[in-house]
Image 1 (cartoon, each protein chain N blue to C red):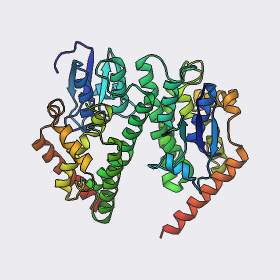
Image 2 (image 1 turned 180 degrees about the vertical axis):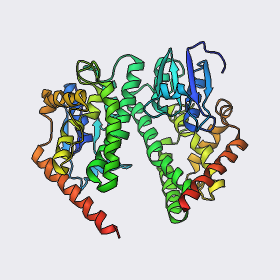
Image 3 (image 1 turned 45 degrees about the vertical axis):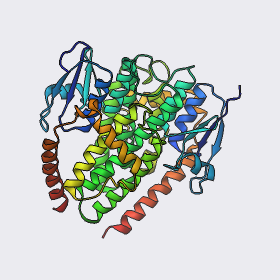
Image 4 (image 1 turned 135 degrees about the horizontal axis):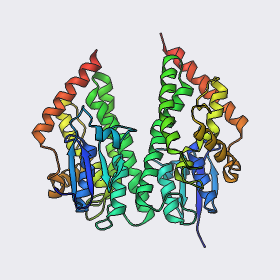
Length: 226
Length: 226
């Protein structure tokens, strides 16, 4: 067909992983280009000069950056197995929840992991409040997309494997099964879905990576405090 | 526009640029809507009911169903009312428009806010960052009259308010934000865009906005100094 699809990713970027999942779910053939983010390739810098980040999708030589933007592009270009709902209101709500997941859920859970002391306590409280909204959204659904994985599931998917890694490293419960039973069971269902399970970075490597990030954050915060 | 023939209500605030861009979208689509002013900082029970997650305007209610987040609302409007399309038809150009909308909201706007609300070195750095990011945004014009091409589109109405607010905050905060030498094309586009009758007639009264901006600035910089 002459379609050339390349995905610039790293081995662990959760944002790039969203695109891997979307391409795999739609059965789109693509070439994965693994970047070492400490030593970015000239091609990466050429394709995403504004942010210099992964993921970047290059379709027939034309680059697209920013995971939400890429996901919508994929859904509009390859119409099989739609990720976003048909109905305009449902589509809008999916976009709303996706934005909420990144702006609120991701930032509060990341803070709960990387911060210490009072900042961590406050982040945990914020995370719990944000998760309550998601728990409510899950009522009567197996996935956010309904019976099968959709746009919001893909956007939130990092929660399914990263949260248990964070919890293991800091020894704190972030997504308590008793408080968030629906969300907790979504995390299991999502992680166990074949395409997701087969396209996840190795857990042991992730633990090493995030432990190193946390150690670095603690070191820099204690060296900068008086 | 008075009357509720299309079944649309918009909850807004007169000084909000986010409500303004939704107004522009509705106006361009010739959608009849009922406008309800929120008397911020007091929030009506209706606002809290329709946007429990963020408790913010703008919110539109269409056929009884509420939607929040201005970019989500604008895309919804574009999908429901198909004439005068805001986003381009081609998925790649749609992706570019969404990419730049995200860039403006995440990189330009926070820098502008910091240049407005901070003092001293923080303010100087923020203003510099804004000028640099506006330069990057200028590249998205690609030598066209408007971001939408010959006529205005999605990105014009998403970004256009910055021209109005930046000039106002320059005056109040005493810092240069729109450097016409640095961004001649964007500067010209801001002028042309804000002069368009359909755009101009939705702008809040400029003297009222200036007084409001001065008050807001006083409050923020006092907080920054304590």
